[in-house]
Image (tube, rainbow, N blue to C red; front, side):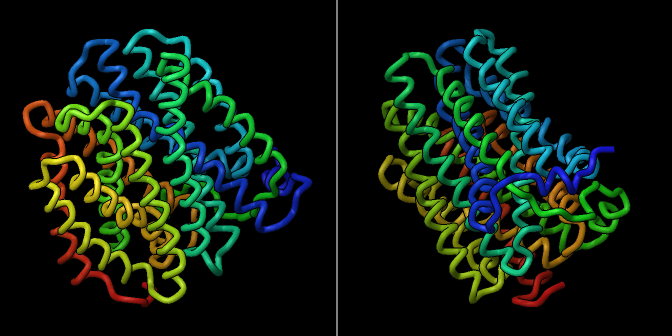
Length: 395
């Protein structure tokens, strides 16, 4: 058996700063891949002459594999270590990105999204687990900082997409850029020393224990709702501004970059506030504000006011991923890989279902109004958080 500790410890570069940056750049890579899907949907729809309902199939293909793979990630981590998963996943994501430039069939696109989704989420979940293990005393702060890198990847993706599309005229080129970025991240990961922990394997008994914990189950379902809604908005922004509000495609793509700029600002602010306020207290208040903003978007029918509303939502909703990940450790602090696997699996269900449903109903109704209906979920959780969760105390 390969010594997983030896692989994790291998690397000539020491230091918490380098570890944080190199592992966080894995999240940048995953975000760059994922957020390119929004602009790609517009071009794919035009090239293959397909409507929103057929386009929405991209989401289950991209996220179904992610739901499945997270439960195998821990098994591989137990055998090889988290660093080995990052190395393998980055290589396979790079190969998928390279293959993307040669595909001219919508069906093949779908299967490539499935393939890349498998290894993209492996990169992402191991990054969060590694950061959580490396900085246990200030987990909330460093997870928020790592998620800032995710936001940077999300901002760069639509901007780079517009640049390569204007230069080459081929939307496929965006993933060739991803291939180049993957090679750069691969070098950094190779140089990095990862934290070595003993409880990396996915344990069935731990999953059963987590599913008996009501607070954890409610938090996991909230991850599905909040992550799914955020990805529905960011996934469909280029389409809804083009379809419903008649903006040019390039400007619609930049609106996605603006939204994720707001996400970064929100995550930095939350990282600073985490020194003073508990994660659950921030989740409660942010959830309340998100409910009102999403409900308000139903009545906004001009691009400026709707974009402002989505920028505010990005500012707030972008904090849910690091906050729920961090608070899950407060509920159940052991077995980080298993805990995060369950949390990411439920989150991925929401990221699969909610964007797909919005695409299905968006052909017959303005998409921003369909998105606004998700405010019902956040209304329900106003009462759930008030009754089931306490402020500032560990469960």
